[in-house]
Image 1 (cartoon, rainbow, N blue to C red):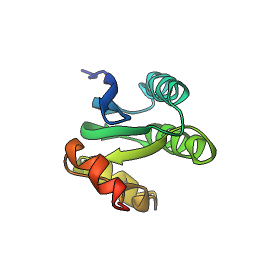
Image 2 (image 1 turned 90 degrees about the vertical axis):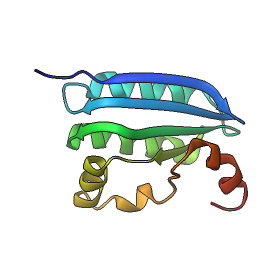
Image 3 (image 1 turned 60 degrees about the vertical axis):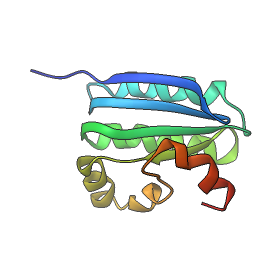
Image 4 (image 1 turned 30 degrees about the horizontal axis):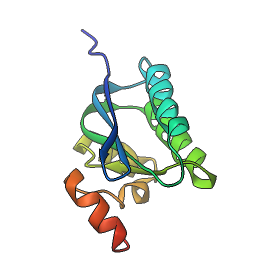
Length: 123
């Protein structure tokens, strides 16, 4: 049976930091929902905000799910919030590594509470 993607959005979790928490599978079946949720969050935040995409409970991700995350990262480079991919599960890390995008995970933190302090210190 196919487990759906669960998305929770906390627009002001901590100090101008919004959190998009993902749980389940982020594959081509869920890519449209993932894109919609991610870009809705991106468009509601400005450059003074951070958007943390919490990946710890993503059980499976494929190239379609990765493409959505990369699209979000590229969309926020010029305007919008700073986008961070945090606490990736092992399966997410593996796909990032195989895709040659592991560096996109380097600004990740093990605990949301660490995000503002570490980023203020240069991350």
